[in-house]
Amino acid sequence: MFAWFARRYLDVLGSIYIYNEHRGYTAIDRVLEAVRKRYPTDRALNAAIERHRADERKHYNMFRRWFELRGVMPLALDRAFGHIDRFIEIVFRKSIDELDTQAVIDSDELFEQLCRVISLTERRGYRTVEALLRNPIVLKDPVLTKIFRIIHKDEPSHWAPYEGWLSQHGRERSTFREKLVDGVVHSELLIFKLPFVFFNPWLRRRTDWADAGEVSTRPGCPWFLLTHS
Image 1: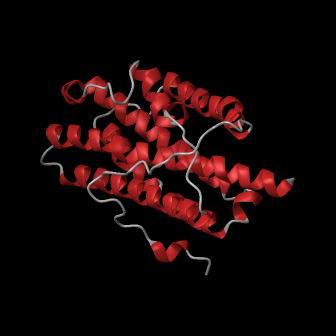
Image 2: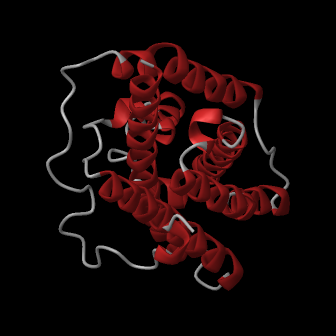
């Protein structure tokens, strides 16, 4: 019984993470578009966000490799399980795909909000990974443990460019409302959505990878870190 519970727990956890990592780097493509137009000469800011994007893609590839090693596809989850999806939907009242990139570029207020949302999301991710690295079920899986250690090391550089912009322009790092939304999004995932997926035997698995059809399918994945050595 415990073996089944552990396998199912890791299956659900990995499926949520691989969705969020893919959503992360594809959403950052939109952020990069805005930053390159708004601050074309700020090489440091552009480079930091490019690194963030590359890390998110690397993390996605590591989770994909983890599923491949297990011989199964991730569960078919949608944007209801994306932290950044829900955060943006509540704060901006529209989905990531509906967000008007040009409006964000043109508005200091909207760009400021976007920086805060990304920063809070990355800090939430960091705290979650710290908790998972103390989780005995996760620690029994050497590959998954290595993945989370890599994410834990990468994460602080992810919120740095956005908080740097906020500090440079004399803006708040976060507002009470945004902190509240962050807590609500995280709580609804833990209390309602994760149990729903865990105990839903009819939930289907993906039939293809989320990055299928992208120009380069597997760049920069540190395969040597995903061995059992």
